[in-house]
Picture 1 (cartoon, rainbow, N blue to C red):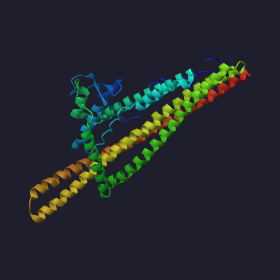
Picture 2 (picture 1 turned 180 degrees about the horizontal axis):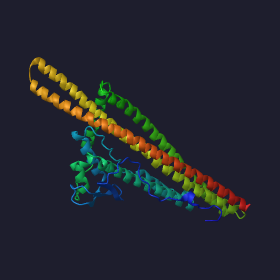
Picture 3 (picture 1 turned 180 degrees about the vertical axis):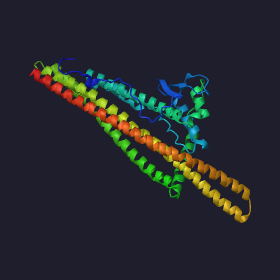
Picture 4 (picture 1 turned 120 degrees about the horizontal axis):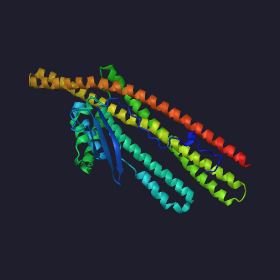
Length: 405
């Protein structure tokens, strides 16, 4: 680098510092789960799930297994389909690994190599490779979050299927859904949506759940909109960084054509835009992690909360139907014992879901507030840091240019 435009610690420090995903976890250390390694192949990602525990039900205190995305989906479905967990907020299933967009950009960049300078091509390639790596790390983090949420939950962690997922070293033979299963799942979703519409006007005597229903619907819609806008803002910063690459390369080309003192000026300006590009890329990365990812995670988590309310509403509807069936049986004096048994089962199920759901939704609110506050404070600190770095960069550049005049 030429003298004058200093690469100070404020500008480019901590570029490779590991960042953790925005997750709401407890501090219980009796069962710790993380993804210690991950291998990306063309059509799949293999996650090495590492477990460290002091719980007696596990054979070893520390062990690792290799899992794929389909097995995470399998584990999520085991919880969601188990009526014993109807009153709990099931941690949202991690999104499927998708690197197609980054691969396509790299492919298009290779095809257009002849239309740009060598320096511009190299910098664009570095940007796309960094984007691919960031996507990969986020994918790993979201799968890790899913497991850590379960491991931190005092009830979900005790599920036998979770133990199998963590401990079974052989192939679990879990495959992706075939076309028939996808179609069946689609119709189940349609049926559930229609059922939700029918239950939307259901009167709930419990004011807590009536308020939660209105809040979660509104909250989910607002946070979904906020996630979309945050993504647009992040992409805008990324586009600015890409533009700096072209400006920097253009200035560098001009500096090689000039045979006057201007060549040094163009060279220094080129260096400034290159460093500005790194800073702008950092801004985009931090906003994506601390804002967009936080919003996106809680958008999925609020959807899981809505699913809990749906299961309770469905149970309430079943309880009301059982009451009507019992009244009808008593009026006809026929099958009264069976109707009473069914009514009692429906009552017990509804009351159990209600009791658990109140605690779950209360905890959901408290942890959401705490971690939004945490991540927004961290984002603000990072934004201030980057703004100061950008100002310092411009000051250094102006000073360097003045020395050349």
